[in-house]
Length: 619
Image (cartoon, rainbow, N blue to C red; front, top):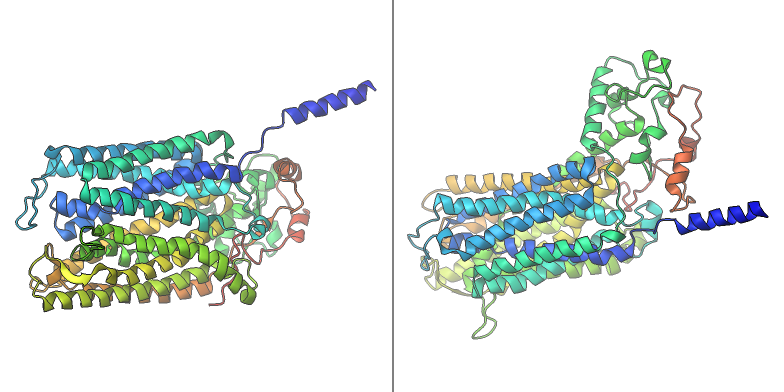
């Protein structure tokens, strides 16, 4: 009886001290509130900056556009550093917090420069012979842009993986859910951008830039508070060490053993479940036949096999799982790089379209006209409704034909986005030809401040097409990178998504500068002040050609791509004690020989489709 009572009390105590389960749907309101306010601040700050630089800071068109694109590129490079910090030691939660505060400082600096007249050049309403901003005034502006770029580096690579950390992202769980986390994430971001493009941009054009930049600053502060309030509910994944260091160790080990011969039996390669337990919670990567020279890093030499209980020197010996992590990254690079030329060709389109809209008839009534930057709401609205229609109509319809739970694969989704983006750019060129023909008809080509009698709604079709392209391309690209990256490198995968924008932005700046410098002084395609005398339509056709070349490259890469082979843990494993059972499965460290048991590998096989529903595409 005493034993029974003791056991009952022990069980009750264990039940009482069982930690509360964290994560799940209840965390989404806090995460999305943070992200909505953050995106509201970001969109409100960046959406109309081309107008601020050209109208308030009196910068020439090409110089202003290149400035924005360069800082956009910088803010897309810094996520690589943010991902390294988050994955190595800080964790995603604290990385997001610190980065948000740095971003907040950047917004405060920009607001101060808009409030104090001494930090801006004299007004120039005619936009003719304007005095440009001094070096000191520009440095204040550049400092604020740099702080926001650094802040973005910690926020962007961590938010999506942190959101996904709150849910079971295994293949079975994703297939059983009737909603897609990435689709709804983009929908929420679109809602925030829509609010900023309508409210903030109107305030900037009609009430001044002090309020126009002050409101995003306040919104960013609210986003930090909302995120911190949800901290007791978040599931915090511990940093698993620097993934870049592990990749480097595999390369060094493979080079060190480059002269060795691979064993005919792949089972002789080094495997250590206990060593890899914290970087393979959802299953180990299985050996693939690609890039076999990297497998040499997992060859067990006689010297290494002598002391089976000694910890391995990871600069000389790597597990199969760690070798496959590097292979995953190498396989992803061609698909990832296809996004670079897309960004390069479209990085300046937003700035140029705002200047087109400023020259057109924007009146909705006799007394009200749409701010030029607000025209972007048509792209955002298309993206928001497109995400819903994609999930509710397109996916169920496509599923009937493809039998794929996601309707179509990630790679097919991206390919459709590439094609629609090309059509959108061609339409942009045709609309510009129409705008200039109307300006010539009314003899307005030489008046940069004139309102051309053509409705600004001629720009809506290209905004619509670019919005649809976003639904397919951007969501598909992010989903692909998250899904195909190794489990312990999710933040790094998001950083890769951002680096696409970075390299593309710098290439876009180079392309615009070359076009501006070599398209002729008399008939320059991209003039500094008067776009009516430019040949923006020629530039759009050039961009379309670059996008077609990029599409061909992408199709080749997608056709040759091989999805990662994954050994998933038993589906019957209870979610709460999964880690405990996993630890029980992993034996103490030892070097396995050819007679070792491989029951886990025998009972599992390469996953025919990835956790996000990606399968070998039939392009």
